[in-house]
Length: 97
Image (tube, rainbow, N blue to C red; front, top):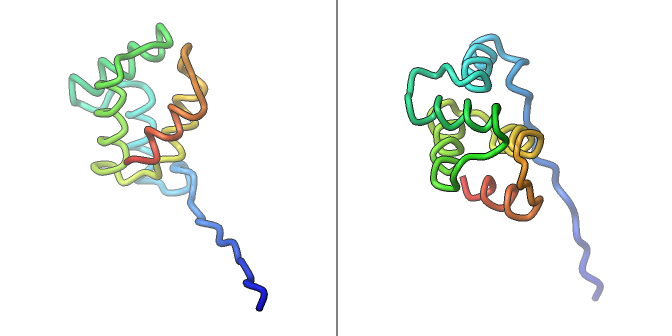
């Protein structure tokens, strides 16, 4: 008997599709969340292309757990900003959150 496989797609919305989420997202990407560690990490990332792995994990946790924004949006942002971007490491670390 042949086994059939089906694929499912997990749908998600860009944070700008919801007005409240858009406010949080814009504060997040500009490093103005009000949390010094998160803001410093995001500003460092935007200005230099780097931030420590521990700070990256804190940023990911804040975006996904506190702001409730899909991890894939954060992974795309980091992919764009990181000088040392590695697809496997970046997306794998974000998937963890």
